[in-house]
Length: 105
Image (cartoon, rainbow, N blue to C red; front, side):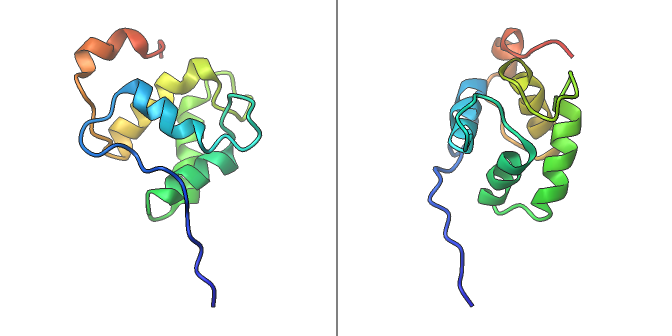
């Protein structure tokens, strides 16, 4: 039985800013289009060793995808960050200072 090894860069330890989250997530953008699809998001969550990564990716996409095109567009990254903070217990660095960076809900 072979074990899969992930060579992705981990999320920064401690508190994570919106920009650090975007940079971390960009490494999973396999097609390089600047948007994150379900499979790419699942791989990102799997790299964090989360249980039920496929389910959490589906829920995150449903929450973050405002225009319902099946992708997290660059202008929807703030929504994905908010979901990760709320549901995946991502530690947030100085959220009040970053409120302006998050897109409107």
